Image (tube, rainbow, N blue to C red):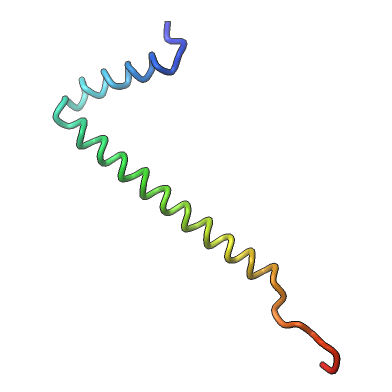
Length: 68
């Protein structure tokens, strides 16, 4: 009966309306969207920092030439 994801999505929406009421759902969706955005922003920042650390570790610190 509930073979596809669409069936579960419909059930989740109906349950959300029953639990929170129709007036709270837009506020809940807005908060969820902001949370997802903040999560993605934090993830990108951590990835950028990791790439910078990897680049720093790979690059030679001081080239050694003749006479040193």
